[in-house]
Image (cartoon, rainbow, N blue to C red; front, side, top):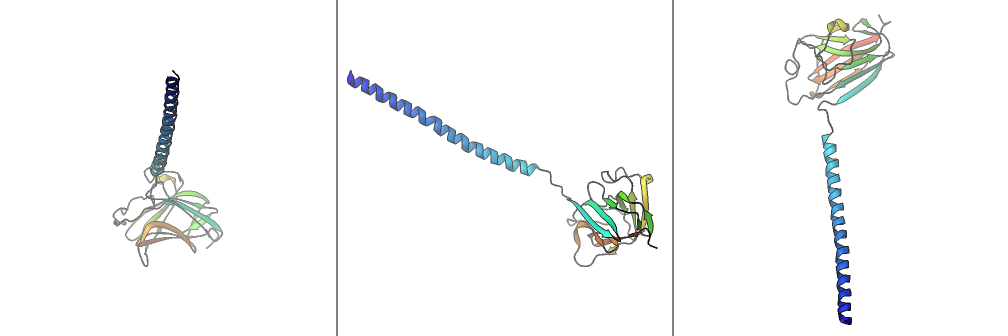
Length: 200
């Protein structure tokens, strides 16, 4: 009887020990799986964030006391024919990608010798083989040129493009250089002269 009691106690001890071990193993496995899932979800979430092919850029500068700011999206050449190809001649162009490019002046300025009031404008262009039209439209917040309305133009001027020197410019860029705002892309540079309204 005594030995049977000892045997039962030993059996109960081993049964309890085995039961205590199993949940610990399951918890460990569960934690490892959770870590992997969380890592995968983080990578997935990171990968799913929208990244624009034509990234947004901002350029600022000062010309004769006038603060100038240009906001645009910068497309790449990617081996394509740009002028007269991706960007047709004779058609209104957003002058970049995505939203219409905008340009702001802190004071009234002369653009190619013509007065333009201080403010923010959509900057449209009409590329040509010889000359370009540069348009300052009073509706700055619009997508592309799909809703372009010529009746909302504040100013339209003509400029002459120039061939760029050196390597082609892969990504479209604007710059404030001296008394000019300059658009550069592929093999062309398009300068727009800016001066104070008081200038002759």
